[in-house]
Length: 384
Image (cartoon, rainbow, N blue to C red):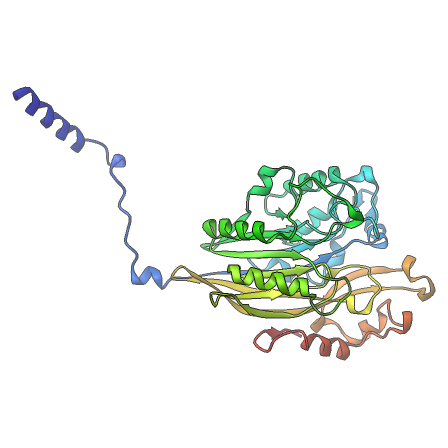
């Protein structure tokens, strides 16, 4: 009995003499003060970054390619937000395939460095042109973007393990998850199942549930719709509402090359989802008048008391600009590619646009502004 008591005493003394780092941590209870702390992360998104043949040729230097001049008028707006998103429409497939524009695109690797330099943090790579150069080109593009630690390259994967991982960026105390879905692959090409995410409601539901468990907010990149159409298709509307019902926070649409409607959707649990059905082209060499206008969508993620809201939503219209000195052969005579905020674009610049006089097109700032107002609900500010 004495021996038993002695053992108990020794055990008690031993426990009391343990160093403090072995003690059970004390978790502070939530306080009203902590609940009232407001976290904020600014976000910006633009649409399709497309490199047509003359754009690749114009960017060629003695040492490779330099695309930075294309973005010189817009760069400072991309650098400012905490997170900036872009859709890289054309694959970076490697020089062995030969660089090319429409219809089978292959953009030089230097584009990844350009996007990094001008401040993009999230690059969607899953588009109808992803497999223009085959699956080895997809692997090449993934590896190129992996060189840049500041960039999350989403939507394309080298294996199932990568596909199962949902990228999350944490900024200012807010965790934001990114999902990517793609409606089309060109030329009836059927890639390996792990390469990208098609629109599949069961898979989307599973992905959203997983994303909710590891983040505070969810942004979904949707490559969908009909090219050159100014209004969203039934497919876009159906899946936008489905995503809203699942409780995602933001939907960024790409692919149509036109600026489409931007609005709020109410989900089944009264959750509000901001949807931009298409932000149009960020920059391209396209020849259609309605494909010259794009959108730069900005807003803040605001977290308070564990609840995230989307606030301060602003659409800043953009315009693609290039020149041409031969309207009879404009396809091979385009140069000085760049992008402006529409509010910085003058009528004098508009008169110099390469499309003026081509197929009876007249670039008019007033006409462009009117078309933009029709696409945005009244509770979203337009900066033009």
